[in-house]
Amino acid sequence: MTTVFFLFLVHLAVGLMAMLPFVPDRAGRGFFKLCSGSAATMTMAGLWLLVRRFGWHSRPGVPGAAGDPWLLALVGAFLAATIVYNRAWHLGWPAARRPTLALSLGTGVAAVLLATPPGARLLVAATDLTSVLLLGAAASAMILGHYYLVIVDLPITALRRLTVLLIAGLVLRSIVVGVALAAGDAGAYHDLGAVAAGLWSPDGVFVWMRLLFGLAGPMSLVWFIWKTVEIRSTQSATGILYVQLFLVLSGELLAKYLRVAAGFAL
Image 1 (cartoon, rainbow, N blue to C red):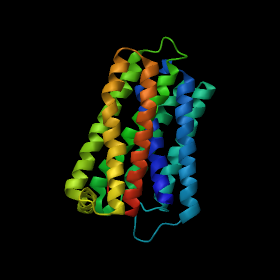
Image 2 (image 1 turned 180 degrees about the vertical axis):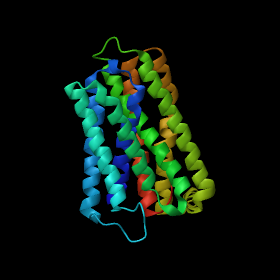
Image 3 (image 1 turned 45 degrees about the vertical axis):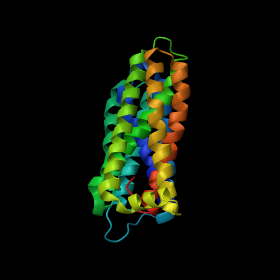
Image 4 (image 1 turned 45 degrees about the horizontal axis):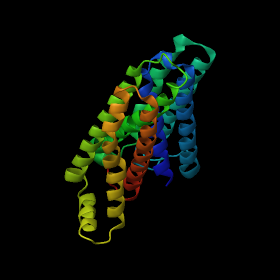
């Protein structure tokens, strides 16, 4: 479970940072400090779990595996850049914000790609990057919705932009999962069919839960989120985004578990 929570926390942290360039400065330093502070806290927790379980030494012949010094170094660099970015907002260093955000995103994406297994790197990399996008958009949109209560002149285009990214993340995530089921994970497809036929399959149950909670559920809420944003009903949109975020977090956590426990890149 250590690797499951490490992947989940790092993907969510990188996703939060990846959404910040799409939010205007008028959201206020509180928003940027909250997002970057949350990303730093989650990354620190994930790094601590990994080091506590595997130490500082890599598994022989498995680059990017849990405990790989290069992976730890990239995650550490992402953490350091995120903390400096957070302090740049707190201390009023505008010149340091863009460079530290760029460094944070570069090291974060590199860490995500390095953590993919060599055997199916392309498929898993697509899975991880779409997971980062979906997690970041869902969490950032929900957080930003609250700031419309305290910043009256915050343009609705900011929330609309994150909503578009959320929809894009869901669509891309669904496509990648579909490709994985059709081509990359025959075992997952077999387990899905077994449960549909009334047979017991523990992995199949989790795959169904992953698809229903993580993809079908959020997709069913997209129209309501978009319409409430269009009519500038930000309180209603934020309430729906709460449910959306819960479903996305549940689905992505299940996806990480299936990847580690069963080898399914979902």
